[in-house]
Amino acid sequence: MLRKKRLHDALSKALLPAYFVIDDESGNHQRPGVETHFTMIIVSEKFQNLTRLARHRLVNATVSDEFSTGLHALSLHLYTPEEWQKRGKSKPATPPCHKNSKIKPDHLS
Image (cartoon, rainbow, N blue to C red; front, top):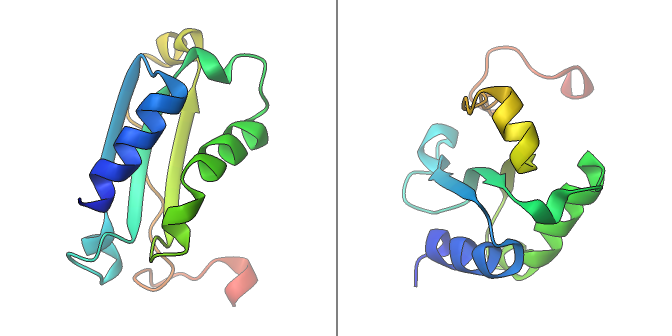
């Protein structure tokens, strides 16, 4: 089974999302076909009353086994249905991987 499907299945079961998009962006990080970098938009009632950090921890804990088998990075955009509605349902931009960017993040300079 592909990693993308495993991620989707595990998170769908745990979070019962109202909206869920998962994109494999590994090719944008000089890793085409290896399923190491993903961007996700997840809209779920399960995020209600959770801080941004707690939401990320919940998602990471749900898919923790994938990190030990090659998953490298998740770009997470996590919303309650109300937050998603206020946002206008627009897809957020994903930051570039520092390896492909001509500008390195401050902590890597």
